Length: 457
Ligand SMILES: *Cc1c(COP(=O)(O)O)cnc(C)c1O
Image 1 (cartoon, rainbow, N blue to C red):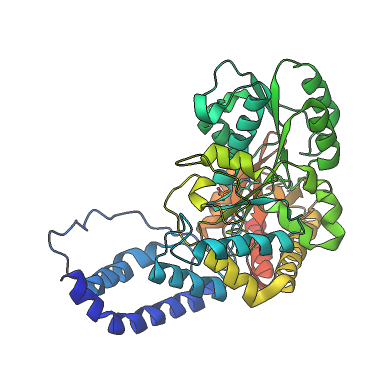
Image 2: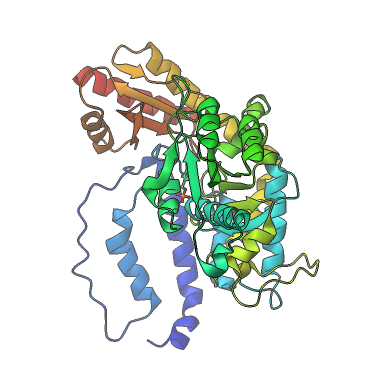
């Protein structure tokens, strides 16, 4: 079937797709959370002549749909994810339909809408408006941009334009206490090397940076330019580095300060937790994710910096950007990709649909659910709570036996899905709450599962 013929049958396929999507979403809470089959796609071959999208859709429904996970559903507690909201879902379908390339300005309203979306996110997260940035594919690429801007800043401090001429004889050191794995990956990608992030000590019984140790380490490297990566919510214990003190130290040593708040930045929506991010307005660059607690589809992160001209120098594609005071820079000069998805639209429509209160409510609800689980575990003889629950993640271990064997058994039952973590060097189990679909009844199901496995032990 030709593509033109295919277009003419869309009016029949559309309703079929709508029905399938609705049924999938409705059945998510009943679905086995993690797929337990074995991949076997070998029977499907690339056709010489295709039979059109109707046949492709049938093939998806028959062969692929049964192998999906219920990661968008209410009892997927792995990693830190989120389930697509109705507004984000509708917007994402529009994104495919309108297929804008948000690369340069001039042919579409899309780059302006991305700017407005970033301004709304700044407002939602209570960040000052001298932060500018770009929507990224996720927090990993936002962390990479943070290190690339820091690299440019550190190079210039030593008289070297690294984006233009490479590292030369620049000397740059990186520091972090509990970096997310993606920060180490970013250090690898940015040419520093994943083994060259100096480990700063943590405070006792905490994953937060020991700032006295940072002070000593910065002092000990007077000939190096420096980049400090702070955690705004570590992925296991949800600890927050002391940004105010770290910013003081960075100021004294001329260091770039990048803050990774992939999900933790959303703690700013809770008034009683806002003190944890005090000093955020002083950092040089910030990472957060929209495909986590904002519950838009993958792939959507946010990178912000107080130094947009450095971002511009780092990412400029063609002629160097001329600062004409034009507030509409080309997105491709501010990010990694040239051609870019209109990922702003699901964020923009979600913010319009649910507002600041909708998301503050979601964050509060998820934190209460995590607290409920933590308090049950704390009272249980069969499990140890390894760290107090501070935000939306619960870290625990079975009282007897290996965490990994326990986790395997739990996930195999199919009613919940949790992922492993490491707490103070020891294997642990993590349960993360960041999905709008999780109800308190789903926490009860998780408790039933934990109780059932405790009886089996
Ligand atoms: C999830 C996460 C990342 C990586 O984010 P992706 O969107 O998966 O690239 C980075 N840092 C922290 C703290 C995270 O929680």
